[in-house]
Image: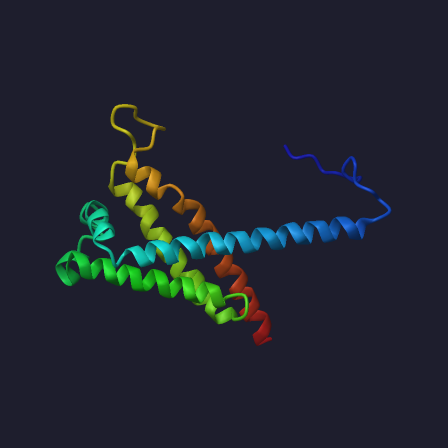
Length: 172
């Protein structure tokens, strides 16, 4: 059970509470910048890779082995499906880059990023992600690639929620 503190944490200087507030704000700002960068960079880099033969090949078991994604191959072909994903990922990254200045870009980028990472997380339900010889919790190659998307989904939802709040405040 959490303990409610009624006094300052040990070591905190009670004569300078503004200093602690500034430190907390600086840490929060750095965390937000790193979190946003941590979503943008994979989207840009992996999105760009979607236009290469290496990534088209790497996607084959992920898309082909996931019933709710397999429709993409008959519709777009293997390369076309990869290109569509690449365009969506890069466009999402660009919206997220604009999100600090535009709440609408943050809403669109946050929603698209959440959808992207929700879909990639859902692949873990369809594919074996555990190393067969070792079982749970030893991740196989697909699991190692996909497990980080849980955190990226969380960050995308935070971006979406904060952007919705900013949009709501600007409307009132």
